[in-house]
Length: 512
Image (cartoon, rainbow, N blue to C red; front, side, top):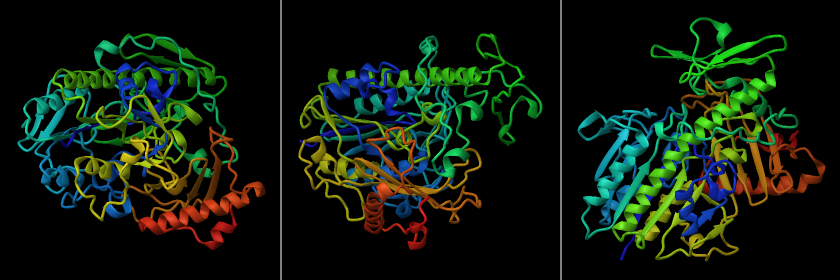
């Protein structure tokens, strides 16, 4: 009997914010159930660490230079084949509920799904609009609960003679972080600062220093639940502005200044004269709001798992939990994602299938989000079409992935110097031990990318010896042979998937 498949995906959920990964930040007992009763992957990587391109790679099983969804401002052409279409054609009942973020309107709305209801754009946390075939409609309540309700209702109303494929896509914990009211008092104790929180970006590519993703200087009043003052630049730099949005960053302090901030909910005042104390305050506010938003994800995963148990569906249902990419939780002093550094590159990945996966497994095999669609098709008994570029992960789940298993993950970020985060364009590879990044620093005509004059740079990290990625070894003579080997692997991977390199022989000679 072909299994049901439930794919649960959140937005910007870092692996470190799942207790089964041992981060020590929070407790997620329902997500941990998936590991206790299934498997955890420790080297699952995103091919482009940003929402829209990652979702396109998952749906199509192709890299972004193939599906042409390269930035936040490029939307999917829904005439393209996708995994839901293949499953639907093979007899599966298909549905998607929650965040879509691949464009709206007839040219971009979901195809291949018997039922769908998706939030426009990023959506909102409370009383969200969902769009379905009948148009937009407001659904009262909290978005994570509503998305789960829709998912459970679909399973309840299914044709019990046929298997189903369900994509349950949560908005949370995407900024700006708004938790369920019942979680508002969680995480009152201070959390430890990450070891690299005060990173000075020495011995790294220019991109690290220039990114506008710093907790201490780039978070907004809304991010932190603080009253946003009216008026000019003295209350913080303008992050961006259009007719409906005016968001300001909470300013930094310089010596001799003071700053008073006001809590939106309680009206409590906080006054600072020490720049480092203010930075740490921002970190604690950020982390509390983020982790409280995660908690509803865990609650609702529990609701869905409990329903499967009650209905006797658990044994023959593949349940996967992941996020569309990783997220920085203060590492390197950052929030957000986009970069190929580990906290952004790593996707959490938990899977349970009692009929086919032994409980309590942990895998260090490399996997990527382009592998998800072939995996769904493999379990459904559907041939993987030749256009898909990923590989079924089923051998990893079943302990059959040997030495021949893929040993390289490829990442490419196209949205050079985006106007909000100023993240530089780059590509590279990750092996089990090393990481090679080429910052080509060009917009290449991509929508949403802007130009600049920063020269290309290489970075090479020894992820075993330097897990925080603080020491670039690209120009280190002791790593010259490793650099050459990684460059060969990068060239081979780009040739395999058909991506066009921006580096050349001359650029490879100058690696400092």
